[in-house]
Length: 413
Ligand code: SF4
Image (cartoon, rainbow, N blue to C red):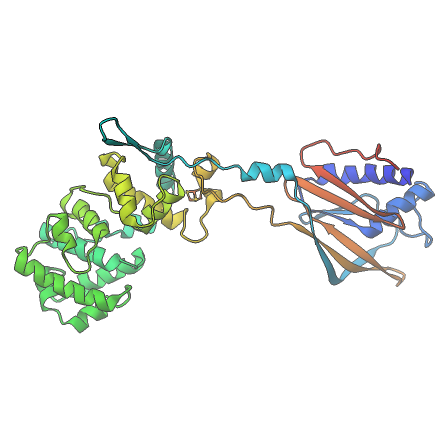
């Protein structure tokens, strides 16, 4: 038994170090042959005098065989009959589960009762790394954001109106769809996209032009009402205060702050949409439950010169990398630089289990032999090689990629 273990150890260690960390395959039949070879000397001939060593390894499509079989054989998969889990290395689990701590903004009370807000400690690193990522990837908001949809050849008053309407259309709607609706209005409103046209257009016609956006029925009514209010109360222009903008039907704080910034060039607050709210919470900058709370938290410490940019920055980031569903932490520099406490831990290698398959080995002389094939699957850290010895039970070797393959020659026999 001891000799058998030693022989298997040497052969198995050779397979592990040669193939790690790639997928490798070892057959039960191969183990038998190893065993037989040890018992029968280097000739390795079995009772048929045909098969020698059939330890087969697979590296992608490349297949190598440690000894050439005397007979040609063809392997046919018969069935999948068993699945078992492969144990993961605990060392890897530890290393992948480490996450940076949340470093939220802190409100600090002064002796005189004043409250000072201390920004998240690493916010500048996070912000700069995100800005660098955004420069590398074009997002829908970069070309179809509300700020860029107004017709530049029209008067400043018409452009402000178009910016306001594009923001109203964008609620619960993708940038691409908003851009199409705006194009429809610009190309099909009789007299062009101006206040006079909105006042005159039939609601059904208006509805038809914007019917692809979310909540198009309500938005049709809101746009018609807003046109009347602007004409009656604001001399045909849009309000130039946050209060005035918020008072319009269908316009909330986010739209008001974005509109004030884009249409009037005044950053009086941060336009916090779902992306800004979600991502800044993922970063651990605060724990807030509504965009309004997020806006208040951010405005308490974020330098004013960033108020305009942060919306554009995070909307694009949320559209391309930090997606609402299926965020791409593996492509995110914040995960790589350990700056995001919400980075999703890299999952174990998709190869996580082994499958036992029954295969038929056909020889040229027509003989057929059935064998169990144990597909041993490995990730980039841990690999388990298993051989089922004839009558001697299983021998298992757990190895770490890049480490010296454990030697089981000293194992108790
Ligand atoms: S690491 Fe993941 S959760 Fe954090 S910002 Fe990047 S994509 Fe979003």
